[in-house]
Length: 136
Image (cartoon, rainbow, N blue to C red; front, side, top):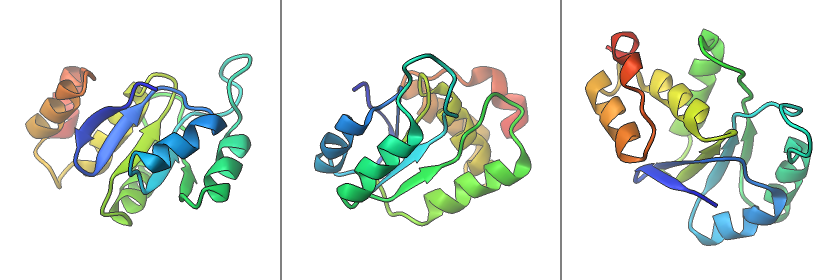
């Protein structure tokens, strides 16, 4: 797994599978957010399988699939609501981690300065610099 720390409360990752859930829990994550819709690629792990593994290991799992920006305001708000439930750390994932990181940044707009969101994402290896105008 390629887990990238964005903050003490949040990390992003490319696609995970059900077998990764125990390692995610052992790494101290308190919840998982899946931002990847089923069926994007052949042989992609299904969200039901990951959710089942999360339940089996006692880690909350949230399925908030998004395809690409612009994201619906209700999905952005839901992401913010889910993140607010946890002191952290939470692991979010999609195909590469970028979509999740973008969704997180939009959910934090108005709470965290746009420049800081871009810097945090950049430190984790996700370039959101083109979003600056949308995040201020």
